[in-house]
Image (cartoon, rainbow, N blue to C red; front, top):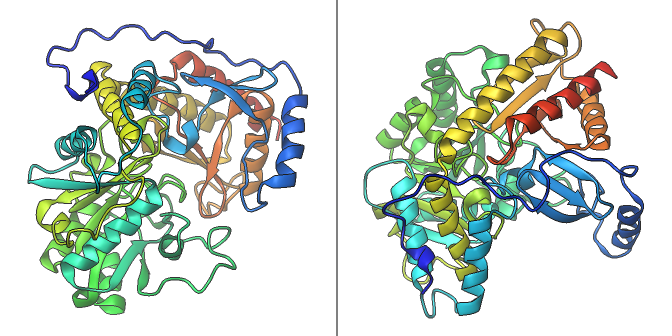
Length: 460
């Protein structure tokens, strides 16, 4: 058994990271370069057109907060694989743990012959997810699969059928989850019929609705009571900070009021922490920022440093409602992914990465605040930790109509890519730029990236 299974009892002072790629932005060819263009031609011949890419540059190496393409260009990565490489690309301890596990065994299937790595990940999830009650987990492969299993478990526990989600939500691309998404295009258009018994309730969007948390929750609850009916509602699935929706942070008290209502009515409240969890926001889970203890927590993306792994974790009595054999899957809780996940948890503790999330938020808010003072198309800055966004509006409308400016987002992200900064876009109206860097990104890299964005806005 590998040493990674035993948590450190006397962690040493964090050592300075050693990088195999210089942590700097560097552009040496046109974007995309000739080798990327050649690969793109090969891709078009064999890869489904339904699989899109934000930037057609082909990556050869990644380390820390830098992506290196096949032409030798180096990009500051402010997307982290949409929140996956939270502790940095090819983090040393994660790579070592995964390699060591491949030399022991790669697969047995936990539901046939179990192994300690799976158990240890579940122990760590019980320790670090919100709530001090007994908790259990099931490990699966992806975020959408975690959502599917969370809903399935809630339905089994309650004996009810209906599922509620919030406006502007994104939960995945499977048959059930695409019905749970707020935005149809491109996730659901043409793929119907969609799953039934899914209801979309109003959310809290302070920049636009101006409601307090209590008033926004009252509006949501009124919808759930009148349109769904609590006796038919199995679960309410929410993102503490909405990802694809545009990093919406709800008003204070919104989630706690909803949890009080859910508990009183026997409804399972599920936190979709797939993008916001695993130390990204300066806490292990974003729910903690709101003083909220969900019944179930969904984890994926950043849990295993880039290896495929996801989990549903929650109150033991809810998790145990499923009959033996009702949960699981061929690759769920793969031992290599589990070994990587254990290393991620240990790295967060050893390197005090929660503090890094707070540092990144401070740096980004200061830099973006300065840009907002210069450019009136920046209407709002929001988020937590290394999960910050700006909402772009038409010039002069930020304090009045707040008209979406999706054209500016497209132009800024394209300009940034040409100059070595990978940005992600988001928002129901396509007018949000989201900053989702790894916790390895330095203040120097963030300042450099912000200078490129400043130039991009000026060039509009």
